[in-house]
Length: 241
Image (tube, rainbow, N blue to C red; front, side):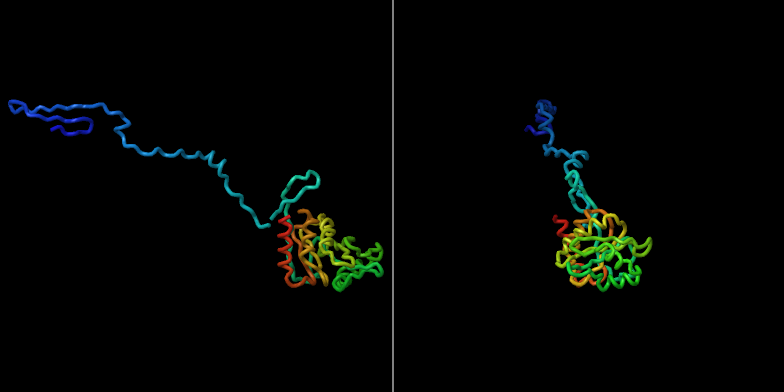
């Protein structure tokens, strides 16, 4: 009987004389039918295509490092560094840096006072120069008013007197303080007084700095409990724009 082989049929028969004759019938087979069919492999993306369509994610540093600010001239978006703000439990007369801010409350009827900490610093570090500056320049400590005293090349190098006025608009106070601090590098200090509101003060300060000036701002003096959390809330509001 015919038996199948790989490419045809093998016919075997017995002929007279006990001579075996093999007859092979071969049928043409196409290459496609002779090969096992497997699914074709999918096209693999080239490195160039993969890098274009699937870019690597950007690595961001702590906010907290920079934020989106609007430039005044062109209106385009630019990335500027945001100063680090922190509390520093050190006596103001032991502090050293490029600029120290003293906040003064004032009224229309009386000469503004340097306050408890300001008077101590004036006597201990500046030999009465701050009180003389207030008197000589008719400084009334109205909201947002500023006077600058250049002290020395070491220790507390400059003192910035900032008027708070009779109210409690601490964000406006910060907005007035920021541009005055843009000229200083390194670190500056804010000497907190009684009744200071840290969150609006820091928010206004960072807005006024506009990413320029000092790298570090330290809160000294009578900063209230929870000032660290207040600083973080101010930075978050700034980032949200």
